[in-house]
Amino acid sequence: MKMTLMPGAATIAAGLMLLPGAAHAADPLSIRLGNVPVAGLIPDGYCLPTGQDKMIADQLAKGDPENTTHAMFIRCDQQNQPAGIKYDYYLIKTPNAQPPAMTRAEFIALMTKELNLPAYQSGAATKPEIGKAGDNLSTALGTKVDLSGEIKPRGADAVCIYMGGQLDVRSAAAAYPIALGGCGTIVAGQILFVYAYDDPAKPNSGAALLQRTRWVAERLKATDGQAN
Image (cartoon, rainbow, N blue to C red):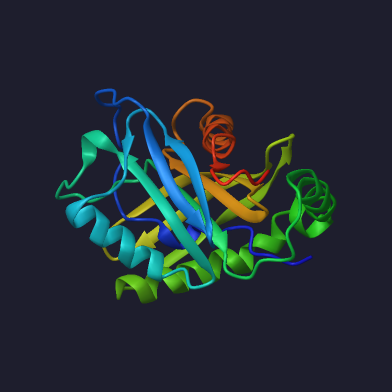
């Protein structure tokens, strides 16, 4: 079963390290997966983009033609700042090409087997996707952006299969590393990915990002009674 394991890498925005700010209580989230309404929660301290941030988010989502971006969460204390979205944020995406509906347990078993292949364990399988993500981002932004780095499997549990690693972003405007953690799961029968991005210099940033993606994923529930 072949699928893109990195939807979201094409939506990295140039910026500098974001420092913690004031707390913001978790807000409800409402999205649709096809015809299925899904409810969830936005993590504390994060908000949906508005104003110029929403324009940027929409532009970047268009740079990922193989996936649908259902939501982006940015730091509430950094909304609509001149420096942009920064790089502490979340994305929720689904691949446009979906296989027949499956349960979460079936998906995790299938992907665990695939991700044990040497090409994934070495990181070689995701390198072409990283390069393609850079090309898509360049097209979306109208300026050359180079992406490099390494993304590897990070295990699985009853909710997610995990991918994680670090990317290096280079453009005429900036050059910086960014840590990426991803959870792949099933919600209402569809494959869905939650991604979290942050500063790789933060202590235990890799493990923390995986935990953050799981928190979002396990709260996404179909409101029409469909099981995950």
